[in-house]
View 1 (cartoon, rainbow, N blue to C red):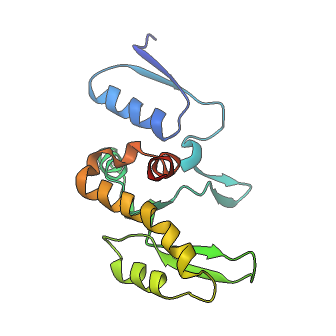
View 2 (cartoon, one colour; view 1 turned 90 degrees about the vertical axis):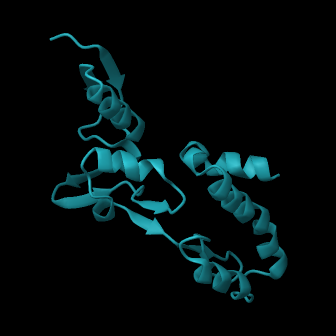
Length: 160
């Protein structure tokens, strides 16, 4: 059989590319080294135990991932847990502090985490996170279509 395109790797990027190309009529061959597809988004059965790679928790800023999954006929809410809080563990006290992570979807949790938890994280430390959160919120308001293309690492570089 002949193929128009060969895709090496069946992670999220490879699967998305394959989906979009086949929709346009291309014949696609996908090659994967592992015995399962999905890369960092994979789940598989290992001797009777369901294993998840951990990507199933997503911060609620992303717009393209839900549309791609919908296009593939996948019910997003059955495979993804949207993160609206994040737990931070203090190396000094061994305590866990919860912060809100979704200013649009969970503003009350964001405010509670920011104004509370003062025994574990000082106001100064919390204030140091403010530029990161504001950059994310501004990106969400100004260019939501581009958020799937920005990594946390690049966001931090742009804040500094």
